[in-house]
Every structure is written in structure tokens, then in C-alpha cells.
Amino acid sequence: MAERKALEEYYYNCKLETPEEVAKLFEVYTKLIWTHHQAGLVYDYYCDETVIRQEGGGKMVGGVDVAEIHTIPAFSAYPRSKTTFLDIFCVGDQEHGYRFGQSTTNSGIFSAKGANSSGRGDDSVFEEGTYVNFCQCYVNRVDGRWVVTEEYLGYGNEIKRQMMAGAQPYYKTVLGDPAERQLPVCEESAQRDDETVCEEEKA
Image (cartoon, rainbow, N blue to C red):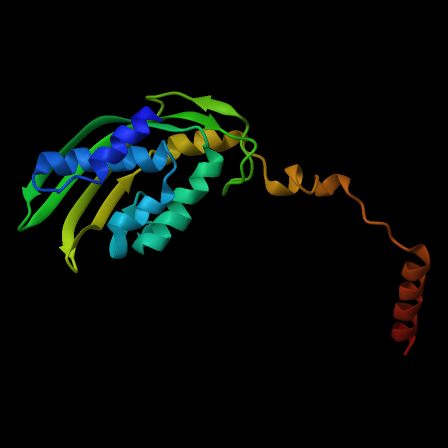
């Protein structure tokens, strides 16, 4: 709680007047969202003009994509996740905007209790340093407020795929394995169907 309050104190009072302030702001911003699950903050800096280019050619556009495709779904998959910054740097000024780059690593648990895009996790633990995420952002004024206008992400997708190898599809964990679920077949109905086919063949 004390850490969160300290982060919020800086976040809500930062003026983005120097590159150093911007670098610290986005470090604080990232921790508030990913460690403390304050997903609503996404909309503070990701607007309709935001374009995010992901590793492998994927793209997200606008704050809604960032929140609903990228951020909120991850909370159920990794409910106890912690983001650690390895490095962050920023250049620019208030007149021309800022550009910053960062590298982070995560730790936590791939939860079997939360719904996610791969099904359900296996409660496997991932440690800091298992994989490293890279990000570069352009921060500019749009309609009088500072927003991320463009972002490039490299999220260690191959390592994440390996981490999720133990994920179980929903149909096995929620509905049961369909291979083991046999629907009853009415023999009388099946017989009538066969007789109908025979009659049609005779005609």
C-alpha cells in the first residue's frame, strides 16, 4: 500500500517538464498498471491517435485496444505479476515532444484460476530475468495533453509461448473433455432415419 501511494503521489503531480521526469513518470505509470492493476490509467496516455506496433507485425490502435486486448486480459492470466525495470532513458523537450525507451522483466505465476487467451494456466512460476521486454514510445501533445502517439513493443513472445505450453483449453477444464462426453443416441430414431434413406434410394 505504501509503495502504491508513493507511486500515485509522483504520478499525479508530475509536469513532464524534463526528460528525466518523463522517464520516471512512465516507470511509475507502468508499475501502477501492471503491478497494482490500475487498468483505468491506460486511458490517461493512450488515446485514439495511439498506434502500437508489436513484435511479429501485430498492431493495436487507440486506448480501447490497449486496455481490452493487451492489458486487462493479462490480469487474469498473471494476477500476481511484478514488473521490474532494467533500464529506461528519455530524450526531448516540451516543445518537440519526448521519446523514451525501456527494458523490463516480470515475475509471477501463470494462474490456473484465471481466464486468458490460451485457456487456463498451470500455476507455473516465472522469475525475474526469464524474459526481457523492450518498448520505445513517442510522447507528444494532442489537443493540449501529453499522450503516447506511437509505441514499439518487443515482448519476448517465444519465451512466453514456452511458458504457456502447459495451458489447458477451456473445453477440457470447463466443459470436460469432449472425447469423454458421448451424447446418447436414440436407436429408434436412428433406425427411422435409415429407413427413410432406403425409401429415398428406392425412389
